[in-house]
Amino acid sequence: MNPQMPLPIEQIEQHNRKHTDALRDDYDSLGRQLDRAGIAIEAITARVAAFDVAIPSWGVGRGGTRFARFPLAGEPTNVHEKLEDCAVINQLGRATPRVSPHFPWDKTADYVALREEAAHLGLAFDAVNSNTFQDQPGLQHSYVTGSLCSTVAATRAQAVEHNIECIDIGKQLGVNAITVWIGDGANFPGQQNFTRAYDRYLESTAEIYAALPADWHMMLEHKMYEPAFYATVIQDWGSSILAAQHLGPKAKCLIDLGHHAPNVNIEQIVARMHRFGKLGGFHFNDSKYGDDDLDSGSINPHQLFLVFNELVEAELNPLAGFDPAYMIDQSHNVTDPIESMLSSAEEITSAFAKALLVDRQKLHAAQDTNDVMLAYQTLRRAYRTDVRPILAMARLQKGGAIEPLSAYRASGWRASKAQARLSTSAGAGIV
Ligand code: AFD
Ligand code: MN
Ligand code: MN
Image (cartoon, rainbow, N blue to C red; front, side):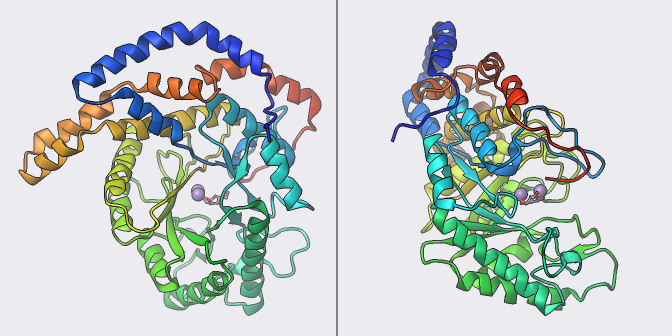
């Protein structure tokens, strides 16, 4: 089937004609530079072209904070419009062909039809996300006491049931993973028995685990705090990996870059998780203070590079089933989400490309001989390389735009959607 991408192809071709000569020039120059280091640029471009990262369906709407949400004229109002915006991002950037849905936010009557609708737009679905951290209209039991860890048996059963329903939806959408993040925990010392709460988590997740089809896996997402500010049940990678080990081989851990204490060495966590075969996937974003959900690479692009450096190391030493799921998990409070997603996908891909440029032999030799400066400079050299021509060339080869942001602005997409779509409401709330 030939996908019907939302923007006219001639528009992108016209844009590319304007930029092709300059790109060729930059690409050839970078090619010569890499060649001197023994790296074939075409091999890197091929790896970059094969790289992709999923978009969360909730990330294409304007996000908000606890204080306010400022709606954007023309933002999507339902799952169908979200898919359209995801298709625009993928059409221009060609690095985001999959969409990760969130339930019940993306509930619809016919998931087989939704899958086809996505395919028509050149998209597929990725891991389903369950939501037991807020009450929905018509819900029988409130999550005010928590969900999978609640002391109320009926609430736990309802939360388990919802996750199993998500797996069922996921089967129809053609995906093979569920990501489980819960807000359970305590706001006061003494409120919750740490051990019993964790035991209830293990019992509830075991029921979900039992419902996983053979080729599925379940990703456990930890987060240090919020909404439980004193103690969160799955607060760190330790609690997460212990649970994943307890549950079995289909359970893995998911690392959201914003879900750690400031200054934590996340790349080292990546190495640890991989060592024990539990690295399930990532939620990319950036943060200054906490779970800020800022755009990937906007605050600490070096950390992103170091994370990918560990992932490229892991590739050299693959354990059975090493295939981490990459997704962007951000909240775009003051930008057009399409622009943020294009920029973030570029940052993430660029961190990957730079990690591919690291001279691994040299690095390992320097590590083994304790040549500290040489080891450090080996990473630096790769990190400092301007890989933008590689990314642009990969995009061009795949039919995307050489300069996605300017092509998007020239398309007038948002202004036209402001006419066609209903307006959304303000109000506070994290999405
Ligand atoms: C949370 C987690 C998780 C969840 C999302 C919902 O990062 O990925 O699905 O936000 O808004 O903080
Ligand atoms: Mn996340
Ligand atoms: Mn988060």
